[in-house]
Amino acid sequence: MTDEVAISSIADVAPRGLARVAGRVVAIQVEPSDAPPAFTVRLEDGTGRIDAVFMGRRDVPGIAPGVDLRLEGRVCATESLPRLYNPRYELVAAS
Image (tube, rainbow, N blue to C red):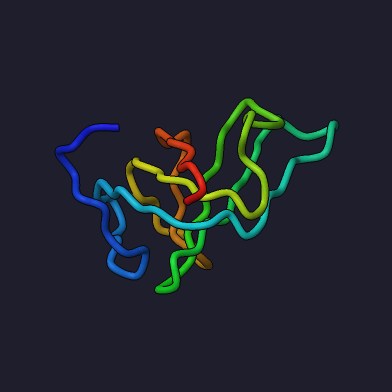
């Protein structure tokens, strides 16, 4: 990850802006085999939730519920939660 963008709270991310967030994975969703591959991760940091969608994948090694994660990418506005498509990610070691 780059150091150009500081980690911000999920509540402070803005549509179309570049965001770097950190939090805990609270849910994952995998598209069924008859749909185009997509692996969706829901991240929560205590201020809000954001979805990260990894297109073309049905899993991302190391990402599971309960894992601490950092994400960086361009925020897309949706009707429900903000979303990052194919973000850079970093697994955070448990302390």
